[in-house]
Length: 87
Image: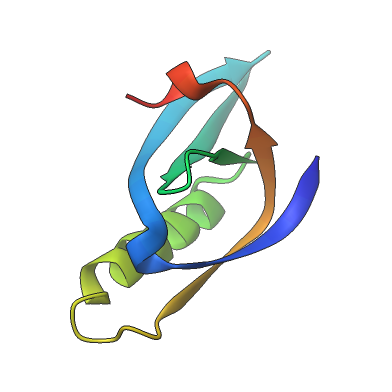
């Protein structure tokens, strides 16, 4: 189920990237594990778009100590119930 998700950076437990191929197309998937136990992901087919979103998430996480109201919009993220996807 796709949805826009708005999270405070402090609510992100971990983030990782999965690289894979769909046919000959290299794909990039950002996987976010939230503090509430839900896992969200977004797949990118363009490296620049992936890198921009990844950098935004990392910057928000790194700024959380100084900006408590720093929010991160995870556009069109998919919710996954595969809790084993992120360790």
